[in-house]
Image 1 (cartoon, rainbow, N blue to C red):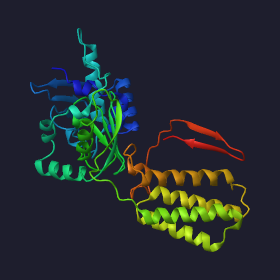
Image 2 (image 1 turned 180 degrees about the horizontal axis):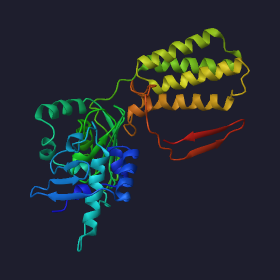
Image 3 (image 1 turned 180 degrees about the vertical axis):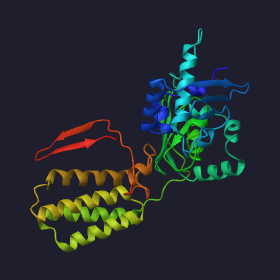
Amino acid sequence: MLRQDLLALTTDDLTVLSNRGLVKRAFKELEEGELSYDITQDAQGNISIRWSDVECVLPATEELSDRHCNCSATTVCRHLIRSILIYQRTQLLKPNSSPQTSSQFWNPGDISDAELSNYFNKATITRAKSEFNSGHVIELIKSNKPVARIHTLAYTVRFLVPGDIRYTYCDCSEPAPCKHVLYSVWPFRKLQPEQISGIISTQQEAAPIPVDILNDIEDNLISLLSSGIRGINKANIGRLRRLEQNCRTSSLIWLAEIIAEIIQEIERYESRDARFSSTRVVELVGELCIRIDAIRNDTGAVPQLFIRGSQTDKLTDIGAARLISLGCGVQVCHKNVQLTTYL
């Protein structure tokens, strides 16, 4: 029997499951041809590959992990990557072999509850369901490698093999499949069959409108527009700083960020900084007014999370990361050029 799960894994998928260095090293060792191997497969689909240096197992019903190789690595190692690659090559070389490819869009929402229960116990599913319904915003994309971005938790879940949650990758530190797979499968079920992508919000009740803070923001904007940046004083700046902090404690993070940028532009003007831009001040005030209107008049067309922000929208220290640039956007302004790098 063909192991379609292994045949569906691309080089990029293997990189996600391990890292680019291990994949390159596995390819190099295969190309050098100095290693011998013997592949056996039992009736259940478990594959054993005895290399001249190690022995690996590719189980049919378990997620891939370091325990499936007898080397000393504590994560998915190059030997397991090498084993998947050699299995793919041997199947492609067989006559009359026509392995299926995962080139079609598929919906992780089609994964059944019975399949989920094979990897998550009842208590875990119950807790996850309660947390899921408490209010989350998930951005979904159907493709041959579907993606779910859980904005409220700042995690992204990638589905690498159709219908098989063993081959999922999440930004969290839990071993795959993690509980965030549940947070991804359930919202995919809410998409209409013709939808390729969408944003699902599980918030049951409308978020309360912080009328007092919004009124305070508008009063300060009126004062700013009346006096102009030239006429603003330290008392005005102090009120803006307190207002910024009030917005942060009320989870109005994006409003707080805009106010902080307005304060920065005021400080640039006072210090005769060449980076000061009156046009930018107008843009910030305009965006602030738009967000206030969208909060006061919540139509549900855009999740409030995107309008207000949340406590997870904050600076985070990262010890190590691999960032992939998708290019730059260039905006030529009156006195400067802004470069935006997409990662």
